[in-house]
Length: 265
Image 1 (cartoon, rainbow, N blue to C red):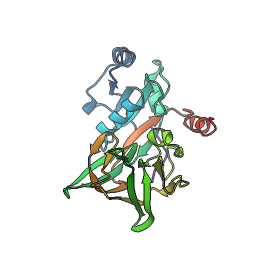
Image 2 (tube, one colour):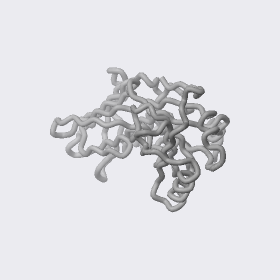
Image 3 (cartoon, rainbow, N blue to C red):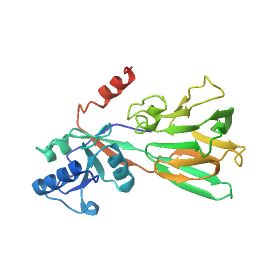
């Protein structure tokens, strides 16, 4: 379950590490902050400060998954839903005041056409996509019970709250509050049943997606940026034993951004 937890004085902010995307703006911000506050190796740091956009935050959350190191992002990219506003003053005070939210990733186990099972973690989403011009035919089961015998579509997404504002939103899926105990199951260009718009699932649900007619209609599966081609069965569940820690300023405006997106037209 996602939970919202405030930092305490026990959270150290003495040693900071700065990481940045490869854009000129992000690199300049990293170098400036490192000169001002000092910079430790990420492995030795108390807090990792990520500079860039949501892609950089996603990469950093993956990199330090399971280490117990909180990640504080500052936006030097375009969208920045997962980032805080960039300010270079009183950084350590901001870090001490920040809230920490544990994010539990999705675990994907994908069986390919050769019967080999490959696993990967996803902080944003697991997505299945057709590989050719022909639509995919998928069977959807939740917790061992078939819920949709056949979904004819371009693909389907299982998204976490952190990922609900990414690919899931582009596919007209729901936006989820960052600390909600939910997953979004969102079809991509559903042809049959045409009016099915997806589902909201409890985060303890296990989703199994069987690819029907896999040889004629091949499908790939991706966990964030890890892609597996020609899958026949994909199992997705939240891994509550693994977590990444993301930091937000108090009053960061995440809820306001969500409401703005919900009422955007």
